Image 1 (cartoon, rainbow, N blue to C red):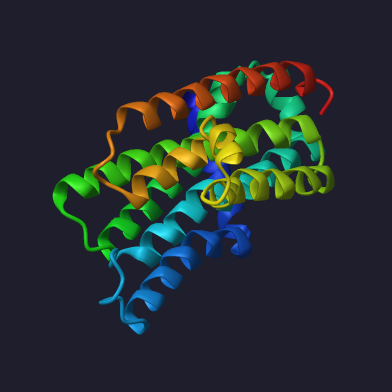
Image 2 (tube, rainbow, N blue to C red; image 1 turned 120 degrees about the vertical axis):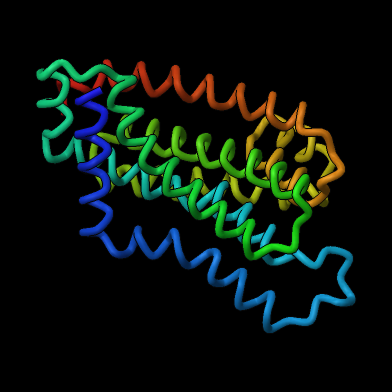
Length: 230
């Protein structure tokens, strides 16, 4: 518990020192609020259009690069190696680092929910799918950062990955083959819910849980491989 708390605190301090990442948690809801206030949505079937759009982009793309960069920086600075030598386990490091970004992402998700015009049931569905999506993006970013080993490679890998998982659901709306493939991605399940709250949460959460399980295993394997080499 002490190790997790120390890593969590470290990530808080690192975020404060990095305003570019800090702004990322603010810019998406601000854009959603401004666009909602400035553009008349009376003729649109969904008056939460910009809220759900920006929320899906944030959960599916926004966090991946930030988390990958954070972990790659730990490896580059040899911080990870010292943590491994000190006996910090993969799950402790993941909970400390990923837990911080999950916490920050959850706060941002709540802000989106407050901006949107949702019913109570829609709010609960929205937060459930958003937090699950944030967790998936955090794990994807963490896995990329761990395998990359340095910040330059982490950026080179995380940007295409973020674009792939972020834009595939958009392409899926126009192509049935892509839609079938996209069904296995957590970002597609986020889009399904935020665009139609009448859909059951069962399948989307099942797919996202499977994504989380696979990414967790990949992260643990990468941590064991890269830990002492960092």
